[in-house]
Image (cartoon, rainbow, N blue to C red):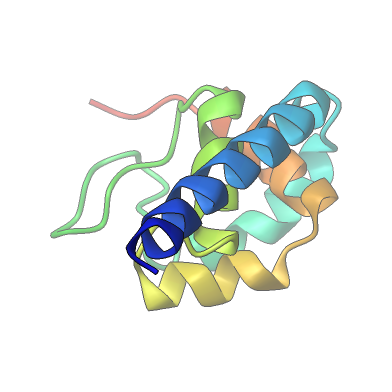
Amino acid sequence: MKSTLFALPVLMAFCAASVAQTVAASARKGDRELGQYLASECVSCHQASGRQSGGVPSITGWPDEQFVAVMLSYKNKVRDNQVMQTIAARLSDEEIAALAVYFAEQNPQK
């Protein structure tokens, strides 16, 4: 029983990584305009300026592969944050790719 309990998180992480690789490959094909449209919800917590606010990290200027991987880890409940898990669960892979392209192109303000 112990080995089964240990294997589950490892399996979940492996699955999330596999999905992340697949989506990351298509992230560069993300629709920037769709990402811009969807970003309004994101910037209600994550500052559009790229500045970190409280415990909410900046997401502007992230490499698109990193953005996709993080969002998929929330979507697959590998990362623990109920708000982000809920938001990520609502997004399709296409929408995550679009957001990744949009935020990768944004330059954080100094």
